[in-house]
Amino acid sequence: MKIVGIVGSNAELSYNRKLLQFIEKQFGSMFDFEVIEIKDIPLFNQSNDQTNSAPIQNIHRKILNADGVIIATPEHNHTIPAALKSVLEWLSFNIHSLDEKPVMIVGASYYDQGSSRAQLHLRQILDAPGVNAMVMPGNEFLLGKVKEAFDEKDRLKDQGTIDFLKTCLEKFVKFINVVTVLEAPKKEAAKPEDLHATGKVDTTIEGVDMEADDWLEQAAELVDAVEGNTYVKLDRGLLTVDQLNYFLSSMPMELTYADSNNQFLYYNHTKPMEEMLAGRTPGQVGNPLAKCHPEKSFKGVEWVLQQLRSGAMDSVRVNVPTHGPDKFVVHNYQAMHDPEGNYVGVNEYILDFKPIVDWYLEQTGMKLEGNVDAVSSASVKDEGETVDAVSGASESY
Amino acid sequence: MQKFIGLVGTNSDRSTNRQLLQFMEKHFSDKAEIEIVEIKEVPIFNKPADRTIPEEVAKIAKKIDEAAGVIISTPEYDHSVPAALSNALNWLSYGIYPFVDKPVMITGASYGTLGSSRAQMHLRQILDAPELKARIMPSSEFLLSHSLQAFDKDNNLNNQEHVEKLEELFADFLTFVEITNQLNHAHALNKKAAADFSWEEI
Image (cartoon, rainbow over all chains, first blue to last red; front, side, top):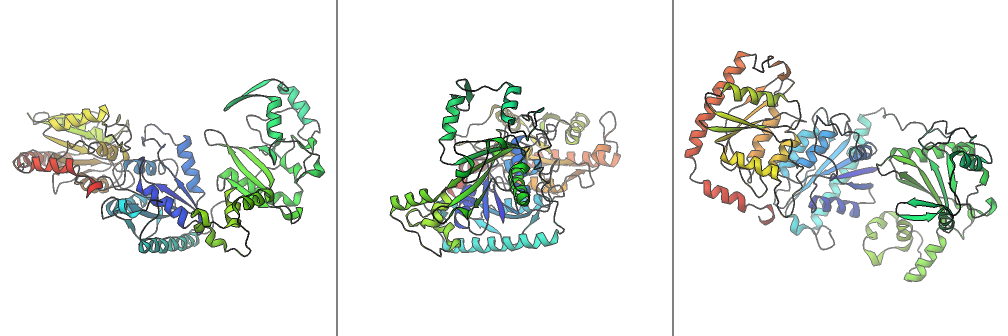
């Protein structure tokens, strides 16, 4: 289950941000939680529609892909901050991200009352027809006297408060399930992926057969691509094409790039196919992704691409246990974005983690233990020294 | 003649709340001077640690300081006041306190039937916050519904009942300003209380 937490303040120092960060640390095992900021969102103005700007589209996409939203609001002048109201106005103008989305309200304040009036206003606002969120009733979480509420590690001090927060969050998870039933049938899933790359993006090179073995040579000639000792200006650096190749070839992993049109464009060609963790041949470059995978795996490939393109997940990891017990091979699919936040393709890296884990154990003197309780790992994680090697290592890479 | 500020509660180029204030400015010109003040140029409030007030905000604060009273006309966005108005009020209560004990009349216009009624209730609560502490005219409401159809081509309210109601409310407001001026014994104290008020130190 994926939940996003919206920091209802654009201030540098915000205890509401701390509260959400605490939820992320403490209850990370209950759901996948991401804290998002509203700092970059401009003040709403209906005469200057900025719905399509990157900050608004980003928050829109994240909310759409979440199962639920937790909003943490401070109180300014007996109501919610203008910055938060402004975000809600954008999200109820030409787009309706929160429509029927389960929402839980929390709040922190310097004073005793814990943003109680702001929370009541927020309920009314979220109930407006243009917003139409499904706000969880009851379970009001008001964190007062915030200056004394956190310890130096930004953890809530009071166990009673932590327990109550846990109860509220557990109910919210149930509430999300109830709302999901209410809203059935489920909304349309992500659009189907075109693994045959029949579309076209800005960088698609037309006029060369995608499936040709010498696609690279033909396409490079067509666009007059530079090579060898020619310089390429990068962000941030200046390298020759040769240097770029040395650099990418020295990466201790197999790297692949497929663009947003699902065309396979690159892999760091350092070994023959038989020696690779996942075989690639030079002739495959330029192919549509459908040509790089057996047909029986199309459904899986499509699912991964949908997660990345829609923003539901930024990375998908799969352990492929076909290389024997002395290896721990992970295929990592990472969404790539341009500076505006648009999806521009997938970076796949394939890596045997085993040597890294072994090295980690050797360096720290820790040992692997079997039968580790997966649930406890998230809360153990932030305690540093006592971290369990298995969960710690696999989570930090 | 007394001078008033008519605060347009939106940053939108097109606003029937602005029209309403413009109508009042014209219609009551023999009774009072109403200056329309815009909040369009006010930057987004982010609680700066050094409490520097943007020039645009300082200008508005000065006008409010010098005015006998303020008429705020608010639209309703999502059951509440627009972020732009809330934003302006955030600034106008951050280290400066122009609204303390200032007589305020609330009006509002909306395209639909409700005439920004819920936004007006929120606005009352907001203006009552310790750092704003305005004197809001009690038991009075001017809700202009279906505001797109409410004005003729010369920007006059085309419904005589609306005009009469507004006239009576404005007469009340002038009286309310007089009374409020007599309710000034605690003014210095109120101003100090607002200035001393700090959520951090309660």
